[in-house]
Every structure is written in C-alpha cells, then in structure tokens.
Amino acid sequence: MGKVVHFEIPTDDVERAKTFYGSIFGWQLQTMQMGEGGDYTIAMTGPVDETTQRPTEPGSINGGIMRRAASTPAPVITIEVDAIDDSLKQIEAGGGNVVQARTEIPNMGAFAYFTDTEGNVMGLWETADPSGR
Image 1: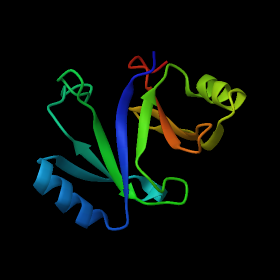
Image 2: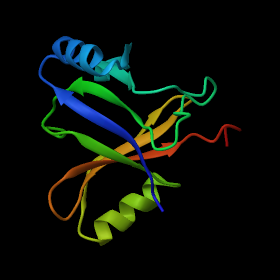
Image 3: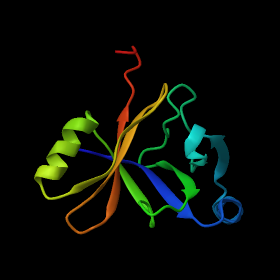
Image 4: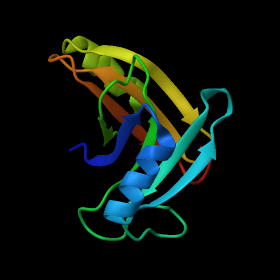
C-alpha cells in the first residue's frame, strides 16, 4: 500500500510563505539550491531521524515549499512507491498522465508528478537504495 510521505505547497512568494508557515505552525524551514531548478524549501513539521531524515513520530510527514509552476499550481500530495517507472506505467494504463518523468535527487531518491483521472497533480517518491544499487 503506497503511503503519503510528503507534501508540497506552491507559492508566488516563497519568503512570505516561509514566514507564514514558520511563525504560525513552528515549522523548521531550510532553503536549498536545486541546480537549474531553482530553490526548494524543506519544511520539517516534526522531529526526524538524523540518518534518514524521515519523521520519527507516527503519522507525521514533512514537505516542501516551492515556487508555483504551471505543472504544480496547487498543493501536491506525494505517495511513496517501490519503483517510479513501474508506477507511471500503471498510472498511464489506468487513465492518468505523466506530468514530470522520474527525476533523481542525488543520495536521496527520485520523484515524479502525474495527474490522476480527475485532473489532480500528485507526486511519486522512490527512496534511494542505501547500498547504492
């Protein structure tokens, strides 16, 4: 069963959103440079394991704040899968569409975006194999 493991909040003004979410909810926000893709702000909503960076409290998920784009105009819910490429094939066979193909994040994993049969943009996450295989 694919678990919801991440959320993304698209914004028009990242700094304004960081102030809003950080001051109201107490989230720890860290902006990282993502190469040509621009900045991405990690939103830590609770304590995490220092090695895996995964939340340690059951039911807790972390997320991100990013600049709004045509492909991600509304919040995105991300589902963890074993193999993104296999999941994208299933999504297309089931009537969904690929918005952004598998994209690697070094030493972390890979993500992709798709639309479901109702037109919602959703995300997929595949955790990197810690052995490097």
